[in-house]
Image (cartoon, rainbow, N blue to C red):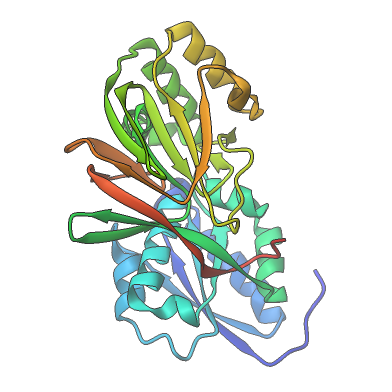
Length: 304
């Protein structure tokens, strides 16, 4: 790795010690050594429990830092994004990401699924701006950079959470279980003014191409295109859904007649108290109103 000569920079690293079977601190130690060799100071903050990263970013004085970085999975990134935006620090602090989870959908979109690539991006200090989904539930606000899932998407995540010991494959196992126990539920959504009221199986809103482990769920998605990509299954047989599931790993599912794929600026889910999957976390309930915030977050990336 080529050493860089520049003014010394200082980065605050938020490390999730639990995600990815506890490999976060080991990854930080390797990253810190490489960064030191490139005249970059890396200061660690080890989270103790869920929610720590968000709260720490909101409450800490980070003015002395040139950027913050997260070592963890999609849930850790979600916390960091919410801390940055809700505190207003997203205006001046870019976010670096180093994969440390088992799904790492966001890192896959950035093509930084290994330590070397992630560190190269940080050292280069090339910054791009990406979109964020703003989620309103009554008077509460949440932000997402990856996915918002309803129906099967939320159920799969709840099951996968119980199978963490299996690593990334848990998403595929949970998906197969849900396919075998298929059931619809009332769906009331609005997509840029188009109302849909029916029994549905799955609804996904994505800012990223990837979700789960290697699933190319929204192949046309771009992090900075100003759109939210929507995947919708209204109803289908077990055989149809199983066929679609295997197509997800190539992205060819969007050509199936049972799959509706749209790009929108805003949407709402108008059911009551349905569980949601937000950025891989089992959090939030309906109803929600969502809109895209164009280029609201700075990240280390070189996006077109």
